[in-house]
Image 1: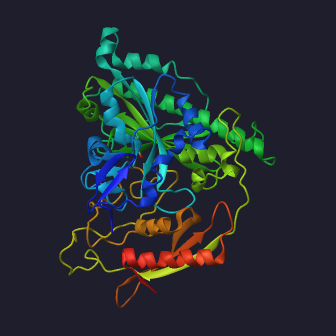
Image 2 (image 1 turned 60 degrees about the vertical axis):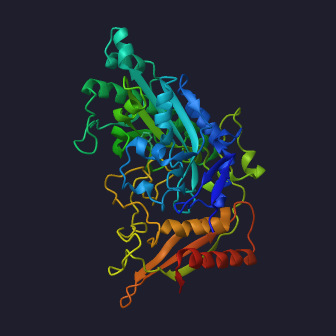
Image 3 (image 1 turned 90 degrees about the vertical axis):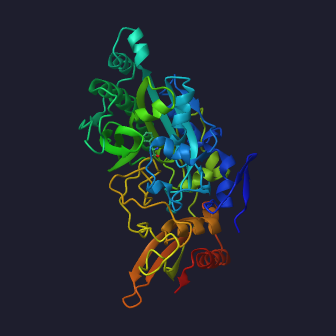
Length: 487
Ligand code: PHE
């Protein structure tokens, strides 16, 4: 039933058995929310861009990329969970909807147009359904590099040149926790071609630049939340902004860090970053350059900047949403229009037996360990909009169980498939889908799961007939597409 070919904005792609991208996702590609005038994602993007005045911005890079661009060029191991078909949208074996803006790193480094660049783009991941996750979201990537040769010509060491640039970054007086553990022998080794001084200089420039971004954003966010809430503490008594740098892991940077911000009682991950793997710059034909890169999720930042409570709202064309944002006016907190009633419905089923769950089965791609989807809960969220159950959320988590590329047949049950059926049937009227019960039958060893679906539109009240109809179709699709047996 899959199309043999898909055409996207004039480009044609042959599909194969790897194709797992629904038409609903493909049809959203032209929206490009981060470039719509006065859209909150556009305003958020521009606010961040304003802190990097000489960086070249790329906002219209095409979302369909090769697995080479999205994974291989960045040093993702072959068995990295991010490559799995349960996590990534494929058109065919070699072609994906980009899962992060880093897919363009190698190409932009190769073009070598400016010392710094920013890429903002729509990115695509199969993931949970809830108020902070949507299969399409937007990231901004930034990078800054310096040339050893050029610094030599200026009669300086590379580190000296970089520290000159550090001096140009606006200062802040915010409390930053930075244990400054630059290297970890296995997770975050110093790269062989880099000197300790060079890494110290690059990471100082990286940290001061990104702290400046965060101070800018959170100052703005505090203004909006204080101004709108009469019971909120005044600016003087409100909790001061706090940030901390935490060691992280990405295949394409070393060492790597995440920046977290203390916001309304919680430490919140805002971005991932690190010193660019020299191998990437070498193969992009700029071996003489060294530098840093970061990536952040625009939705998460826009949600706290404006107080937007549900990620689906970004896709709304309702003037009650869109009219509240104006690029040329001071930032105002979002005022939710009335909340329509929720409607909860449960669906319980037996998970089909797969080669990987029955030891005697032969054939298929039964070499796979069964998917950890429903048990992985604590993976750090990286640049995804919020802490996530997604296995690829933080691009890579050294502690996460590695699972091999998804099999094409005999595929193990994966929660993301339930999520996608829900999206496909309900579009934006599903608010969240969560596992409420799970058990294994003591005799048959079959696994039973119960999911609770919350049907709620952001724009109107759903009728009973409508939610009943949706739930029936969702149930039927779970049977047809995933082979579950309804209990
Ligand atoms: N691409 C990473 C992610 O999606 C973020 C990142 C970008 C980290 C650049 C380091 C450097 O989570």
